[in-house]
Amino acid sequence: MRSKEILFREEDNVLIRKYMKEYGHRKNRFALISKLLDSKFNNKQISEHWRNSLNPELCHEEFGFYEKTIIDLLVPKYQKSDKIQWKFVIVEMKIYFEKLYSENKIKNYWYSKNRNNNTKDSKSKTKTVKRNAPYSKSRKQNVI
Image (cartoon, rainbow, N blue to C red):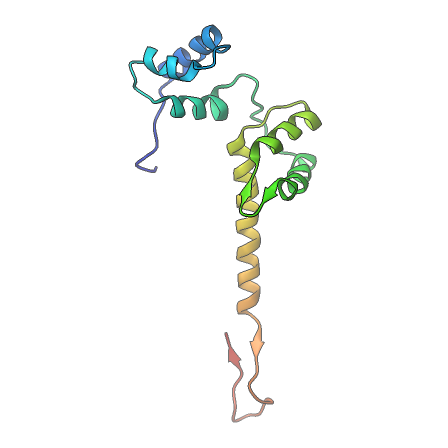
């Protein structure tokens, strides 16, 4: 567990859900909820927790083949230099599948997939053989 990780208890989750039903239509809803929770969490923490865990519209199912394929197609479409515009990926996923997936869930899939691809690439590069001279019994191959 990371030291910066904020732990929301079930009582906190119940209160956040309750307050979102009451104040979810307001522009400053997360700041208001933070005050109602005695500033136990700041508005950004509450907002992220709502968007990634508590929102009742969220789909918590695992990604299927088609969801993964669409993510693989959408992310490059919304990648501008080093930044990926995740909110547009989320919106298109909702249009395609009529399910709301959390930003964290999509990011976790994308980055874990790329991490695995990068690991495979680096392993295959280390297995290549570099020869300085033609092979002979007196000279061994250099392996990088």
